[in-house]
Length: 396
Image 1 (cartoon, helix red, strand yellow):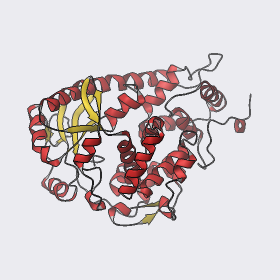
Image 2 (tube, helix red, strand yellow):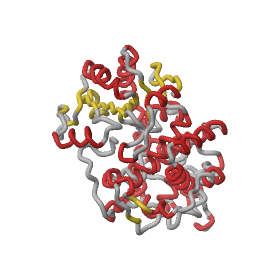
Image 3 (tube, rainbow, N blue to C red):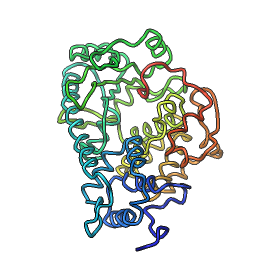
Image 4 (cartoon, rainbow, N blue to C red):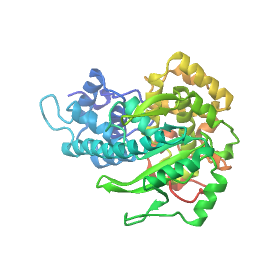
């Protein structure tokens, strides 16, 4: 039997103090697993299985929104068993059900959002789809591996009344699900006013009560700019739409962001979410899935695309966000994010890497390093400020 310190799953030199549960989670949260990676995971489990707190592992996999992908890798490659057939991971059925449950849920959402896309295509709305649906179908290439929730529509503000009519005709309304899940009710007046005045790059979500036991509600969110107004960054929705590329989502013709814009959007969103009070309070500030999304995008990016991405970063003065996101993504995936690429965005002063609150107009410094915060849900109790944004969590 090899000694525990001889079994290394991944290069964790930049991540201090990881527990076995965290190492295993990161090793399984990868786009694909090579034969050698599978061998090392099985060896690690053979050595550490009894020491791993499986409840902690399951909690972290769900908290970081990678459980379906983790479950796929564990079951597809039979990593729950040793080479001799000895159980290494308890409750194998739980992972099978997590993966298949994600598939069933995403199939229901795919059917509903295909209906929305058909209606948008029949209207005069010029749009593209961001994030989850695009990433799941065209980057993860697995309907179950990435859990989706809402359909994120990017469009010009002038077309918003047309979108509202389309969604109204499909049974949607601006609002949120009641606690008992029976109906959609309007947001309170304070929330509506705050979003209308302060969050002009987006709108409150449209929702419809779910009609399947795997989906509580269907959500359609809209954005008119990639950046929040408080940042003073002005992009043109028409230009973003002009640069978009045709695609197919759920069997329906649609459009998605140009890959250079997807990289820009991903980097900015990682930085924003990790440091904005709104997301920190909801516990969705640091998610392994968000860093993994960026890895998937980088794996598809050609040198020409990277140069286009670099041009967009310079145009919108987002070098800090680009470096922040690439730097921490490389800490989690050092073999998949080139060091040269990260360093090419490095600003002179990188002290901001350990700061938060700047997007809220305040500035504080974390007392603990990134690796410690990443897997500790109690980090939000350490936050000095509070979000002023009322309404749904993690929708902006």
